[in-house]
Amino acid sequence: MSFRQYIQVALRALYANKARSFLTMLGMVIGVGSVIVAVSLVEGARDSVTKEFEAVGSNLIFAFHSPEQRGTGARPGVFEGLTMEDARAIEQECDLLAAVCPNMQFRGPARAGREERATRIMGTGEGANDVLNVEIAHGRSIAPEDVENVAKVCVLGQELAAALFPNGSPVGREVEVRGVRLQVIGVLAPKGRSMGENRDDCVYVPLTTVHKHLLGVEILSDITARAISPLKTEEAADQIWATLRRRHPNNVRDFVVDTQQSVLASIGRILNLFAFVLGGIGGLALLVGGIGIMNIMLVSVTERTREIGLRKAVGARSRDILWQFLIEAMTLSAIGGTIGTGFGWGLSRLVGLVMQGKLRTHVPLWSILVAFGFSAAVGIFFGAFPAWRAARLNPIDALRHE
Image: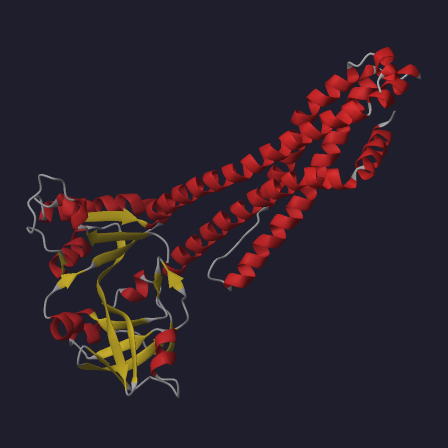
């Protein structure tokens, strides 16, 4: 028999038991679909995180106060946080940095007329234009003279501007933050979420204004810097670490210096763990589907014992019987894998549409190939024993079988 004839015989056998064949394939459908949906969720999350980091910029280095990093032998309360002096020292001593941006961010209400909204207040310097990839849609950004003159001005994110000033442009009007009136000088271009923060829902204020009028103390939540090139990012981070360690020798556990690539790699490892767990669940479903295929094929061999004996009596070889039942098992798993691929792809697209961009899904080609290939391998593995058992039947005994 040719391979085409084997396929035709397998399809006729499956069609003769439609309900049983469908229930057997259901395990493969669920297994393959689960693998594809799991991969699409993880890859969608990976794409979202990568785009968020790219929105901020590249070659970034973050230095921030982190008291939880302290060891059990450290003295509590010694190190209160990063200061402007730390930022100036980093700018002067680290020659592998293209720009340095000290920041002080906190949450609070912003009010304009009758409109009020809880938002993120971001005290920053003119370095934000170079480090944070700031783009202005209307007006202008914070200038060096605004920082130097402690100007009571601010730049609004696109979403916050629409909420506080639903009618007309906010440029030239005032926003009240912690009882201080700030003139709006610009509105950011839409940026979306970046590193867990919604940059469209934010008030940018000169850092000196935050220190003098809003907080009354010169502390920083973090210092963000950009390396002169991607290849120098790690070396630049080491320079920042060395500077902070020299300035605070007794408090090296109170701050963290990390790079954008390192943070992204850490998130990638977490996502890979989720992919492994979710993929394992789908793999278990495929395993159960394979066991179902073996069970059905063993039943099929028993039911068709006389057919096997008759085929052998008219000249069919054991090899022909082996291939007949093996291809039947492979066809069963391949059809189930094909349906499961379509089911998984459609379900992942549906999830993306329902979540409306809040949860992205992405189905890479390799996930479809891997899931389909694994389903075919399951058919071969679990169909091999029933096919071997059918091929070993004695034709005389098979013809006598009732």
